[in-house]
Image: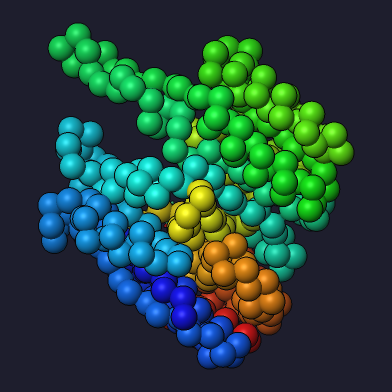
Length: 356
Ligand code: NAD
């Protein structure tokens, strides 16, 4: 038996996690597994119910599970109020820290059927297959001090990296590169930032343990440009928290849409599997959100958390078949997609289960 905690979160989170959960249940039925699901609150919905974006009960449930499926957190009432002291994303940052999830893994792979949904030219995109390793519990999102000074007129954040933080994620990236094309792009800003110079130095030292892996050091500004210009040059990309945050959203254009991108946040214990998109308040409650990023996150969950590779591939293939059959959600439809092939969240979820 495997225990899966589902954290639907806010906005479209509950709409898409429902279908992630349904797909996992369908996989369990097909392969004869026993998955037990339990829901818990996180983000705005948790603040509304308890005043706390990460209630103790949620953390306990997560710690006692084998894997966590998360939707997204966030609500416009905080986005437009920078002074709010209790905020949904605090719950997300805290749970990553509490569970020691220092590695965010984001595969960027374009389904051939979606080539035309991207704003990048097809011949530049076709064949791109990138695996991002973004550091998740360090860097500028966590460094101290982080405060207002001079009567609130100065804002301070601190970018800190320790050698051990760089080493442990770099090791994961190198190990993964050994199973792929043996190439790692390490992205930093070592020409300007001291924390980046430490990053580069640490990656260079570790690379000696992986002589078969080619390491390319690239500055973040250049990497952002190269990703759009020639995404096929990348295989494994290793980078820090903020650079990875920005670069992977840019890379979502390589995959056609934010609604297609899955991620896994892992450390040494239980991991969180989640789409990279946010709570999309602009479309929340309309039943039109693309559930495929969440469904593809369940494939990562099956593979990484449970070692169920065949089950994971079955999910990815089901998504592929649905797309090949011409079905789309609004965000990945193009002008040629017939109206009747444009599905809502539930219809798309059902189609994937049908094709499993
Ligand atoms: P977003 O990802 O929520 O939305 C960006 C755009 O993409 C919107 O137009 C949205 O409609 C569209 N989109 C996103 N997911 C989609 C899907 N599954 N199907 C179809 N369209 C989709 O980013 P944002 O607008 O910058 O942020 C909204 C809220 O989400 C904010 O409160 C932000 O803090 C939060 N957020 C949370 C996470 C997370 O929980 N991991 C990540 C990013 C943003």
